[in-house]
Length: 166
Image 1 (cartoon, one colour):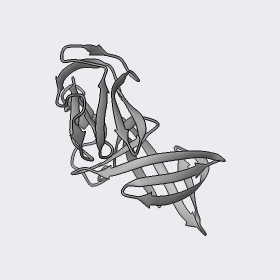
Image 2 (cartoon, helix red, strand yellow; image 1 turned 120 degrees about the horizontal axis):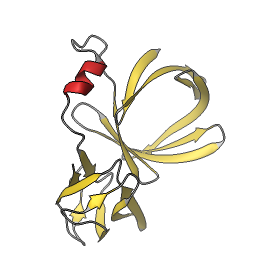
Image 3 (cartoon, helix red, strand yellow; image 1 turned 90 degrees about the vertical axis):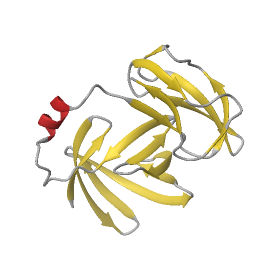
Image 4 (cartoon, helix red, strand yellow; image 1 turned 60 degrees about the vertical axis):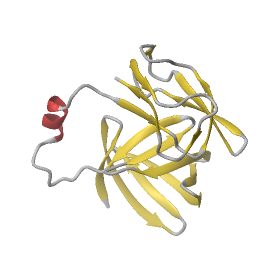
């Protein structure tokens, strides 16, 4: 099956086919063989070309929020029947806005930013402790912190908004 998949603001052509216990996956023409397993509560384990990855996946209104190695990505599956072409939608869209969400339930251990702080792509923003492990959530682009919606020691739930960056 072929589909367009939008990860953050980039669109990929993805083709996949389930074979036995594995998935044959092609992303923009590059082939991968993937073993995937749902663990529990939104946690998934992937083995891609011999490398292991753990991810947390939560469903938002019209997309998925996927956290891998502390980086949160918005994953959407655009409807090919949509009236406006993707390029036209991008031109008419407002400036990028990041909403950093809790990928899992836990406790806020540290905040690295405050309202008004500039941030760069990949910068650590907040540390969330879950299941006795500390997870640093990072920025997915450059911008300025508009709002910090939590404080240290707050308990958060999956999908809860933590920080807004514009």
